Length: 198
Image (tube, rainbow, N blue to C red; front, side, top):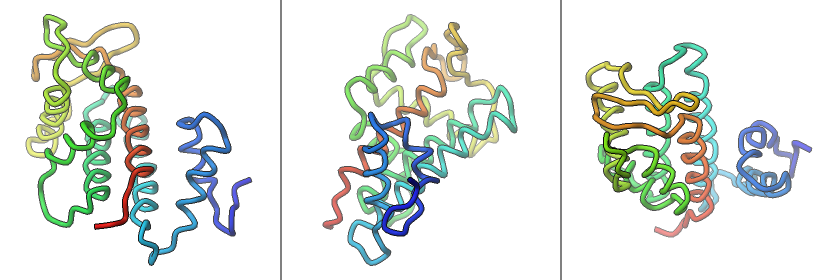
């Protein structure tokens, strides 16, 4: 395996395989997209598939460079969410980052993944937050990094220990790898529902 219609799919398959129920489903997903040339109306879906792998792989590589830092991987996951939402909706303008990060999570999450986020980012009283509020908290952490250079102070759940964060004031029960998986699963749904029509 690894070649379909003369296209090497193994690079992409190794990344996407864990997110499908079978090897065949993963292969069908990747191969169909890899066959699309630049003139195909759905070529943006192929770009989306490539960008998810690239950006999430960067997020996954950060802990090797900065052990214990989870703000930098979060940045790449939110850049991925924004980029995929903009491609899905064919947005050509500048800005609107927060809006498109919100759209990504509000439009492409399953109910199960929404519950994971809402129960994974709670108030100090352990009250689940509305999805938008939870996503806005993650986006605020992203902005503190991008605009203020703050890449410390926010932590995901560590093993069996919930993390109490002071700025923003939340308890995080979600592990970084769980958020990563949510982003990839949601991006796959975005790619699968991409409509090339304007």
